[in-house]
View (cartoon, helix red, strand yellow):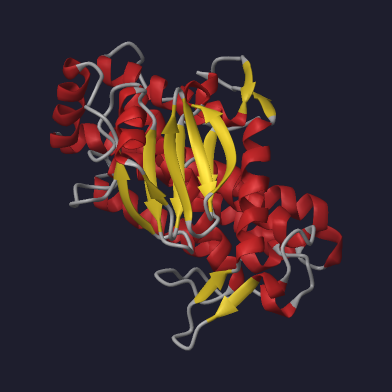
Length: 344
């Protein structure tokens, strides 16, 4: 499992990756920069003008290493992977559940329970840490409203659309208070609401970029346990969309992605000069800022936490793989419910 911690991010424009024995050779302007053994990698993510030799693509496919291509600013473009592996019986069961509205709603409820509980956790932590500077009242009000959403979510009679309605309400509450979680004091990092495609301010730019990295990792974890990342329960089928990966990442957004973004901003690890605004209004990450985010993302994956359900210590980067295994066990009938990741 440890190999899933290692994702090779290639951000240098003009890089060329080739097979060199059992290694990935990274070459920039005809100069060899690094060789990385293929068996240590769980994935390769290429940003912008990065190319791979056909021999390396075949080598990655043979070793189960997925290769993702993103635009220079993190928009997902394509993914190359080898033959589909895994248990066909598990996939058939996954599809049967997806075709059953009641079972789909049950899985969606588990996923949203994790998301809302973790959103509330982030808000309460901020209220505790910054409650003395005037933010506390609004944050505690938001936490209380999120608790109400969480309670209503537990009604097993709710259909998918009703669950999505509660999710939308909770999202509005959470992102409505998100500016109170930003303590950097920089005007450039004021948050007026969630926007994307394209993001229109630096904080939304960071959120979208980290979500892109996270969905890549979650997708790889699902493929590793034999699940089809395209067939989800909360997110329904759409060509090209990794719906199950989007489902599974919901519980990790607040406590992993959002907190990482808040740390980067509040601790001054990213500066306003790390962003570029286009005439269209879209905000993009500059090269150095993007590298800073990727390094922080990788470091966060190496932190060790105790899994609340398994009671085992593990690096954060293995949590989505563990959750994918638990989801597979639930779909097989080995677990009565899917236990979303909710840290204590």
